[in-house]
Image (tube, rainbow, N blue to C red; front, side, top):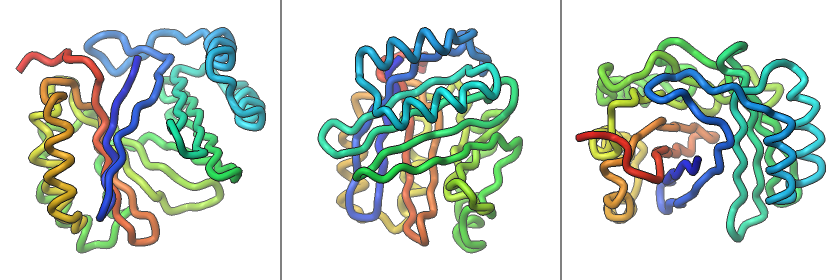
Length: 227
């Protein structure tokens, strides 16, 4: 499955996609059983995954039953990532990233209520709480940590499967305004995402990178929501 996303900074944005080798059981948050070793071998065969990333992912996979496997490689920048999740059984996941020849490891932990305060300063978290409607939220969200850190750098806000990109864009635009994103960037993001308005929206990813605020909207490539 291909998952598209738009990552928005204050003065720029990036359109991205990831290859998901796992699949959810339709209409649920439960994953089909993933034959990890076979899937990862096929991934390696097609994309030629970086050797260090490959070795680390294989080591991590031995911690339990992997039910998520996601691969991402930037089309022209030296950035490559592999994500494996044990979220169905153990509520955590890992990402190994290579960026400009530097490797990073990140940990993803499932949380059961919307906790923005751990990521953002009080003023920002309160503003975000006022513009994110509770009715759009799924049953769980995710905090992302840099390895060795106790404070999360990101929160991935789970969106109920019934909502499309069109349903969520007002919320996303309000988030961008709180993050002081340039108005011309907001306008261009809305223009570029319009063809995907009827597609399913999965997550809103909000990041605090040393007081640089970044927002990402994740959505399916193909139309699968009835409006």
